[in-house]
Image 1 (cartoon, rainbow, N blue to C red):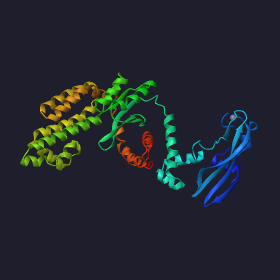
Image 2: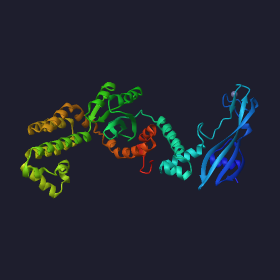
Image 3: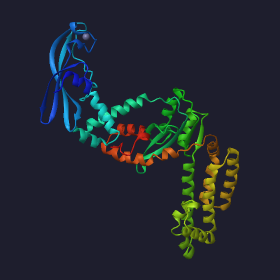
Length: 404
Ligand SMILES: [Zn+2]
């Protein structure tokens, strides 16, 4: 049978006396009352001699189960009239958070379980509703987020993610050294980024560089808040852009072909997107065929492959030389999409060459893409935007089981 000391050691009830324990429909109920010497006024802190009993209340709290047997603590509490502040208030409760129906030790147990199982599974295991579990977990995430310090952030990456296919975006910022998501907001324009950058500036964070794609919105935001900060146009997005250029080129060429030539180009899409070293013998034969029958498309492929060398160059000076040669070759092909790409690369030369000073990329942020997708599916089940965001902030230490 439980005792005052047992409740203290198992549930952290320091100031409450155990009255009795009973079993009711498979649940263990511990009845407790605040020790007389520990009474105080919730309003002004006055102690017992100033207090007069003015009524009673009972409240039931979830406690961690023993095995599969649920436990509850039933508090027999007093309403107290305080002669010092002249108010009638309920006695203070120190073993639970003010708005919770659960003991603090229960909340900690829930948070530990949420690290290894889904909210649904935790709720089922504990025999409580998932909204209670989610509420406790959410509060813990909120608390941890508040404690986060941003002072030593040096390298960040910014990118957009689609919330729903094609429309509604969110902007996500990552600390490239810790892998933590630092900021999440809706939209993909400068306004989605500026308030966060300003908060970094207020905290005097010493940023060294930011990695991003070549879209103007985020660049504008950075230029506005940190005019001196190095913007690095990351390899990841440039590769995406060059892949798009070769895809469009292939489509356009295909449209103007007939007969045998058409047959050669048909079905070459994935071959052309793949790097040279990953091509099978059969694909290499096909590439040779493309070279014979369609010189421009072959040139486009070579340009795409060549551009990958850029990021392995040892210095910005060599990078600049490389860009000069590459863009000249791109213009010489006369291919529309490669001319456009060359224009764009020259326009963003500064950001491309900044890579050599910092060697950062949005790659790690892109790496979270799948995790974000999984989370999005789960979070939409909950229809809770704040929870979705909170989970994003802690995505970097999510294990696959840490979900739901
Ligand atoms: Zn008082």
